[in-house]
Length: 403
Ligand SMILES: *Cc1c(COP(=O)(O)O)cnc(C)c1O
Image (cartoon, rainbow, N blue to C red; front, top):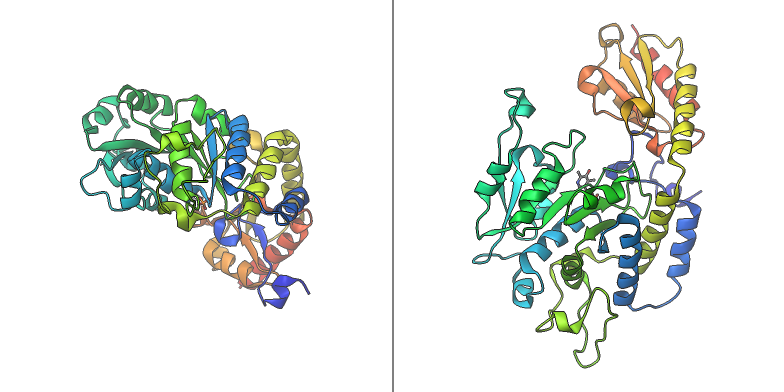
């Protein structure tokens, strides 16, 4: 009996990708070992955060970095830093921002459910541009003049959601933001792999970038990274840190924090609810080092072999056509597309998915294209022996569905 058995929680086979609702990713033994070590000593959290910043800086090319409680928390704290800088009075008032500059400019096509995290800091999103590309009504995306026109004394930042289409070009938005001396916040939570993206968005002009620690980096699920300009990372850290300190004795390490930056001492900030444990910080850093050093080509090859084995095991399954798309084709990791003959099966892809999830063990495949009658096997969350289990579950799901 493991801990999940004792809790009567079912363990699931994950062919759906690294999804927060399925537990994010699984940590490597080295990461767990480092977390266990970290759990056995007291440390000064300001010092640990300062060293963490240095490690993140090495791997992202940013000036500084902060381990947050997820990419969403990184967006909230990054936005808070853009609103307050090191102004302690403003920090104290958040998320109440009446009477202070609080607008974050965002392209309409970049709005997502996650931008709640930006609003949570007290920012108001100023939406710009049209959705012509999204609805196929036209050929034009966001243009520089539209960003210029929206900028006012109330603007504190420009936000950008990194998407597969990368439209509008990040460099263009960065240039406009820089001309107005405004920070550019990039949500790149799920834009890893490729690992080159750790550095790419900073190199292209982003001021702050948010990554999830519990997705492809395979750190603790409740972690994330905010990296970018030192003074903003510093302002974000101050608003996350435990500030129950005596001004007479508080002596933070140099680098990110300094008494000189602050005219007064803030109390606990907006980010107190986003506390990150010492074990999580250490785990994230070790996971980040492993991710940055990983043999990505080798990993892709293993994933392709695993999906090929699954495709082979599925041969002859009625009303199911499996197509393997290599990593070279998708540009990221390989996937196995499963197209169901919904009419012959008299079941939709959603219904097949429900049957898989009701099985023992429950099997999850990606439903991102289920509307097209397709389930996708995303290999990022697969364990080595999962292919035969998934094949058996699919054969059963397709045969129960047959008339
Ligand atoms: C997953 C995700 C987030 C949230 O990341 P967490 O690390 O879970 O907080 C934010 N934005 C996008 C685009 C994401 O995919």
